[in-house]
Length: 275
Length: 313
Image 1 (tube, each protein chain N blue to C red):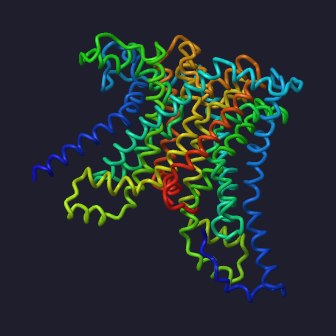
Image 2: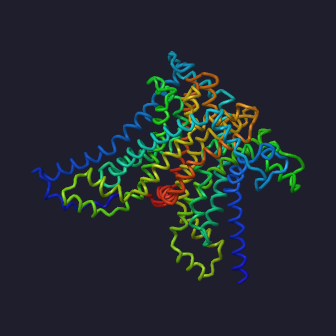
Image 3: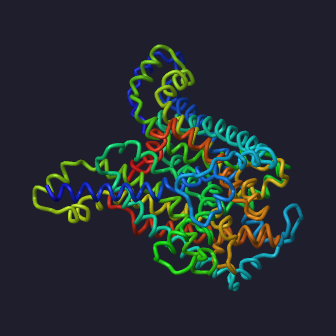
């Protein structure tokens, strides 16, 4: 009995610790973004807001370029998502459902590119994109982001695609369905959770990417959120209220998307390493 | 891989060709599915990789200008450069520090989440929170929490743990520790969910049988759980190292590589050399050398750390 109580309290303590480490910082940032400036920088921090204001959000959305950044990021993230999902689902179908003689080899190549450190490509990719005249264009960010999301996406899709029974496809083939029809009508609907989590993964990564965006985008009007917000960090004498509001708005789309497919996302994330 | 060996459709194939031709046609179609991605990766990884090597043998300063062939000059200059070796050392400290801290945090979190408690399904998903949030948010969050008048310093002084507010990014050592801790905070959930998934794939009767035989929790962890986790830990060790070497934005946005270069790891050095000092070829040479070092690491890691039975994809 006593060991049971000890176990319980240890578990509770551990969970409290996790909550404090993982969730509390976000709670504090989000709630503080609604506090009056004097409370934001008050000597004694307040766990529960004592004041309420939307002035930081107003400043963010009215008198900074933040709305432009948001629109740019939306474009880049959606574009990345569309191309990444198309390329990775096609590849996953070929790799996992069609028994290619060189399938294993191709899978390995894609695995290598997934772990490939992108920073090593910073210089040459920048060179390539500037030769193509794509510097300071949002499409350059889409190109880069697809490169760094698609290989991992193929990996994530693996568990979802291999779980589909082969008989289903055979039955469809017997009924005269072509490969493309089988893919669209049978496999994709069954792998939908996987495709959704890949889409979210691509969106989130493109939404987050900073390094390439900071060198490929030159004009303020084309900046995505991370670069724009980082610019605000250094711009004024630090206006924490404004930055906290910016941080909150920036993580909002990610949180909304994640709450929709979080379970499949984590499943897909771990499935690759598990096999 | 797909289990798709029986082909009941064979007799329905309209083409009166032999077995071999049909089989080849099928895999040709398969390659067509994989080709777009492979071409994309060839154009954006393989080709740039080649051009990085070419660039590193020239003396291009700013992008768009042309350079002349200078052979190994950039490499020789780097190999005798104090800055390069210092950044190399810092990258090693960075990777090791991150590995250590993340492994510790991830195992603790995974072992906690592996227990049964109300809300466990929810917790096992949302643990990943700090990993999915954009870096710039992470940076704002920690710069604020760790500022001299921030909440952490307030708590440290208030509880009497420390006499006066700490400058978390003020000194070389403090800044190094801070960026490693913050990056680990961001990345440990990724490792935690993977370890957790592996833990849950361990059949519970193994542990129960060991418990019946009188093994205590600690013995069960070291004798049963850890060996069974080895394949997953191998993948995490390899991929995690490469991914954490790659981290640039957290460091750059927190410290800008400072104070006095204390947090200038190789990625930061590459970035600075190319876009602050405008020595593109030099930066390309750093990239190539870093790539070779990582390749060597990966080869050694696979050679010596591979789990006993080879895992086939």
